[in-house]
Image (cartoon, rainbow, N blue to C red):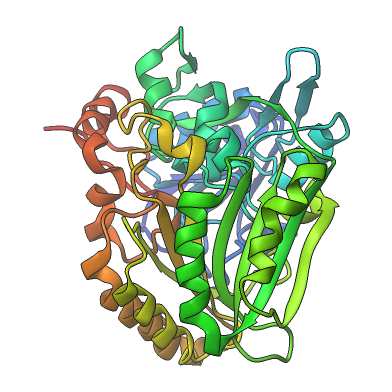
Length: 463
């Protein structure tokens, strides 16, 4: 008698013999309900999502990824791709389908002479920086060390080095990809150039990227970084200073963000957070205005390891909390927009929630919007509102605060950063890709005409 097991949500039935054949053909593991590691493997960073995939393929290499894609297609299983598992909208896991889990693929090779590094897609930035900083090198890599390199890169890659060295995608040299039809391709400026263009900001729409090759730069190991905290009563003053300083005064070597957060057991504060990656003897003068335009409550800005800067927000964004985000791009921090920030941060319902105003300035802003799939080069500010809470019963109030906050900011906004989209932002997908959406849709039709890779900020195939 043939044994069948229904996937728990999608109703897809896969023969036991097919599952066992799939399992036997992998160098990695295949996990399912009841297996010892299953419950831990299905967890993702955002505790808001508690999903139960039918199978989790913990891939050990390219061959496993190719087999996983083929198996999911053959059995009509929805497929989620997991790199670091850090996405706000929970795209790294699915109900009733197959998770193509790359988290065990953590190889990193640094070439200090060529100043390049190749890393597999299960690598997180904490791993990547550990290897490159041993040689005094780095590339633009996000604002939290627990973030995976894959998701951040495919969405564009805002980070602490972007004003000097551009976005993560501006430092991508090549990528290895398993496409929806099971092919293994390399994409670069000289090979599959159209795919290379789409990977640099088109998210996970075109295949499973198994490794990335990056250009590296001399950074650190000591930089000037950290933050300066001001009382909430000075929120408007801080943002007006930030507006002028970030666009007109700060050199490329200094990437500066503004934010609102609660220190442990403290009240809401306004923060100026920065990373200066130039010569330290010049940097003290450069960062002085951040701590002298008004008397700060706390000055935590000074010499520190670059790896410390990369971990700066880690404690405030722990795995397992519930997260909901709203974000977008602003062409300017007008006085009216500043009033809205000051109003809503003063009424946030959770001390764990925070707001971060990221910047697209310096080198990141000087790339043509159509040179890569990341289109939003001319918007200097990218605020993200992060609701965070622990009790699922309180979800409504925290989600509503973020939605209302963003609704108030919408008149001043244009577009949205792909990596800041929430799970209910389907109506904002086109604006996330901006002027490049049509070209991306045509590329999707070429590489994934059936929209197999759809658990992502999804681009529908043209036509």
